[in-house]
Amino acid sequence: MSRTVRVGCGAGMWGDDLEAPRQLAERGRIDYLMLDYLAEVTMSILQKQRSRDPSAGYARDFPSTVAGILGPILEHGVKVVADAGGVNPRGCAEATLAAAAKAGKGGQLRVGVVTGDDLLPRLDDLLAAGHALAHMETGAPLSSVRDKVVAANAYIGADGPLAALERGAHVVVTGRCADASLTLAPLRHAFGWAGDDWARMAAGMIAGHVIECGAQCTGGNCLHDWRTIPDMANIGYPIAEVSDDGSVVFTKPDGTGGRVSVQSVTEQLVYEIGDPRAYMTPDVVCDFTGLHLEQASRDHVRMTGARGTPRPEMLKVSVAYQAGWKAHGTLTYAWPDAADKARMADRVLRERLDRLGLRFDEVVSEFVGAGAAHGAVTPAGAGADAPEVMYRVGVRSANKAAVERFTREVAPLVLNGPPSVTGYQQARGKVEEVIAFWPALIRRDAVDVKVEVLQ
Amino acid sequence: MKVRLVDIAHARSGDKGNIANVGVIALEPRWYPLIVRELTVERVAAHYAGAIQGRVERFELANLHAMNFLLHGALDGGGTLSLRTDAQGKVFSTSMLRLVLDVPDAEARALGLPAAP
Image (cartoon, rainbow over all chains, first blue to last red; front, side, top):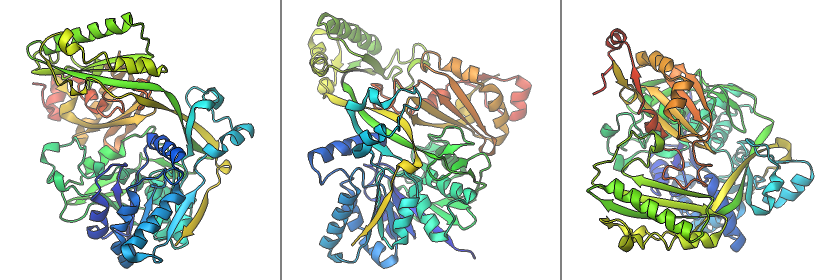
């Protein structure tokens, strides 16, 4: 029987189930554990934290998560690959070593650090050197928002984490690495796949794409037959069991809830993709149109047929910039005529905002229970007899004072607006900073990935 | 015969910048050709009239009995700018499934399609 390598995904986002990494490390019979913490907006939050405290800027949960699974790591050889480093991978690695020392394992753990994705310190030099970082959709030059930029990171691929694994790291911490590359790196390490073996690169990246959102491929957020998904409270996190030929079996730990079916895996395959013939990643361009899925046994889905073409010469860059302020307020109106009352409240509020001379880039009114989720696609008259409707109103503006004043204008409607109103605890929302994204491309050779291993 | 897409397909959606992606998957492989025939770019664009600002792109994944749609200008500027509840396009999946198809009776019977209630 040929060897297989099992990669589990124990975090599909920062804030995912804290028990999942332990479930996989202790009960998943896995070789590698990948953890994805970074959404686009996370990078700007972390960059701000670091500007206030130079030791911050990474996923604070990660060191204690690793400390909680040192047994599987040091005794059973489970290796961890995570983008927990955020904008401070070295700080994250040092905190992880400190957490291991505190747990009595000082000096034993080797932590690899992958850097080079963070372009913020180099941004002006890159622009001066002719890297325009033009907006991918509009073509506008980055200089138009340069003074508002708060983060800029290139999506790097599997080469960095692979080098760290080859140098003996038990745990690899990256910054902005493509999520699926955190799965491909272990597979290249385990099987010695050549970086230009495009079919296998694609198989590894597609396996990573399926598991990178955690339980979203094992029955979580699964529309197909959702009522019958077993034991969701104890849902199993995904494992990709990969063979050297690039075939993959998706499964989950024995004795856990959820469901791994052709349908649950297909829903995740089509999640957040563009052209399925050319799914762009830093490591390979994947073609999904030859994939074949079959239910091998209960909670085991086999995938074959991944195809790939050479990796792109350009890497994607995500630039985050400050784009004003926003706030929301909500009120709940009760039957009868709940939706009509909420709509009248909206007309009254908008007129008051106008009379105050407040101007916003956008005001969005929603009527939760009468069509907020589906917007203009909602059938006319939906929610007409709803037992209650929540009025949810939000504003956005470059003028912070206008947004602050808005937050004072919703609550008064309880006394001076339409009747049967309750649930006003959230009437006065908090003013939040708006971060916008500027997708751009940069030549691969302009991004200098560096790897070190700390002990 | 009227056939609801929600009775013959499942779906998942998400975001990429100001674009929502909607994957639509046939519940039975034999229903897939009908879905490909009916869910044209024009039909989907008309369904989302007023809800999206840009064009519709359409891709086929016959191997998975699935289609992928990109709805441009769907997210009020993008996930972090949008003030909407569904800022990340998570439930465009089920708004797509609100489509109702007109299928000739003989074909509907041959395919065992469930009639809309």
